[in-house]
Length: 479
Ligand SMILES: Cc1cc2nc3c(=O)[nH]c(=O)nc-3n(C[C@H](O)[C@H](O)[C@H](O)COP(=O)(O)OP(=O)(O)OC[C@H]3O[C@@H](n4cnc5c(N)ncnc54)[C@H](O)[C@@H]3O)c2cc1C
Image 1 (cartoon, helix red, strand yellow):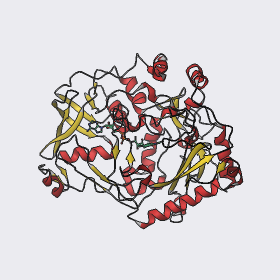
Image 2 (spheres, helix red, strand yellow):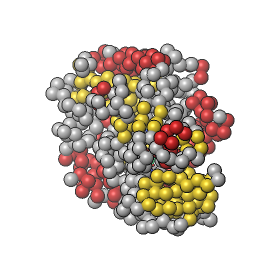
Image 3 (cartoon, helix red, strand yellow):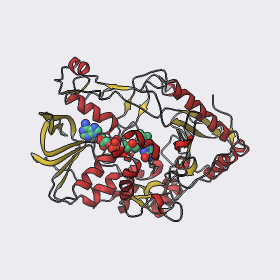
Image 4 (cartoon, helix red, strand yellow):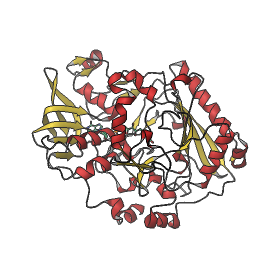
């Protein structure tokens, strides 16, 4: 029903500026970009600026759903197989709150990719994160490109212009609406002795908590597809093909010559690249395509009957931000708005109110664990909060978690996450059928340092929820 209301708003539904899918692809393009996600939308959009290049962008998913525009619905599409690849890891000792199904790893299968269902926070890596990437990928070399993408609306008010730009196509700013409880949380953080800062992107203030700037404009999510493809959708040299599941890069004499994909009818199509094939199918799917192209560990490929083109350790350096979640119940807060007609009306008329934000998730922080090297200015812990979402929950109450609903008050949670995990997992082929997802082995906590970092993170989170300010609102931890 909500979607029907949203469809009637031109700036949300954008009926005249949708990115159309071509019916059939041509035989040859200069560049073929695989995956129209966060990265692929930018790469294809930028390449098409050169009029003499013919660019094809292939995406396994369909168009961006209108319902993904209100920021408060950001979790609503997780596990929806039309939009999310709905990956799960191989079950292990961790993610026990998710039963024996393994850990949930949402990944966008849609134009815009994971920028359609992520938390929208505008983050960059810290300068020190790039040191191990080699000199061509240093933070200084990346900075001009960060600036080229960013359209910051709050330079001079929230952030300084030293590391920000206002001229890029991707709008960046804080949400218009913050639940009043978010300011109570900020007071609790301050009382715990943790700095409150304006800008965690500024490498000179790496530590602290802030109300994060977001990819948002006019109360809506702004995906990279919207920023980089929509304005270029009428260029004759850019073709976008949706529902195109790429399964193989064609390689001849060690050169990528083209790709093969299944179209919407399940037919195999072949398309060639005169210059380059660019794989931007995400950290989990790009290795899978390489496996089926004959690039990966020899033994695994041969086991599945795939001819080996290059014996390489693809999929062998799988790292993920592992963390812990503390669940809490708020008993006293006056913030008990529900997703009701007045909240919807406020959004439809003004693009403001609880639907225009992600509740307390817009608050985030970075701190050092006992293992961090402070002289590098490289915090290794990040903190997120969950709650106060005006979303379609069971009861409509803001802040209701996906799981059981509390009868005592409003549920919220705090996550402490290790940003520089040492545990290394791997991705393995599960079948010779490219439509069968691979197996993900995250190997969480196989390195003992990760447990130290996560425990330090839990202690920081505890210091916030034990503050006098918090105790006013929060009853003790759920079992
Ligand atoms: C729940 C969640 C919350 C997050 N929150 C934030 C945040 O607040 N801020 C932030 O900066 N980052 C956040 N991230 C991380 C960020 O979203 C990702 O790092 C980023 O989107 C990855 O971009 P990508 O282009 O590599 O992959 P994706 O954006 O996932 O794009 C890959 C694209 O390739 C397509 N594709 C895959 N396989 C094929 C195939 N075989 N054929 C054709 N197409 C294919 C996919 O459908 C998808 O569209 C979050 C991530 C998650 C999962």
